[in-house]
Image (cartoon, rainbow, N blue to C red):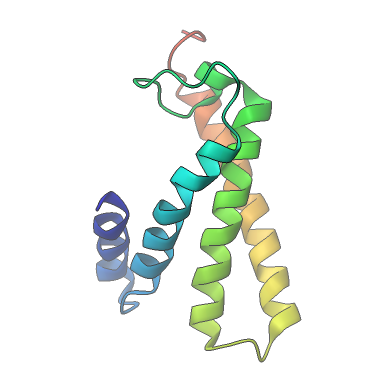
Length: 117
């Protein structure tokens, strides 16, 4: 539900007719399966949010980058209307995912929560 609301909110401002909503809902669907795949032996603290402060930068990058990549892949391929410009769209996905992940890490360091305070 959060992914749908977030995606629709972005779509209202960008006038993109559900592109972001589709990408966000797809990522929220995959997120639980992906988290179960990267769960450590001891499990996660149920009240902890995914952040660098609680899990470390390596785990955060392993968690963030694939989900951002999938989000951008869904978004850009729907926007392109198919796979006609496959390599150009893939290049856009890779560069945008790297940029988004770097900005996310910078924000995590600028506004820390948990042990960095």
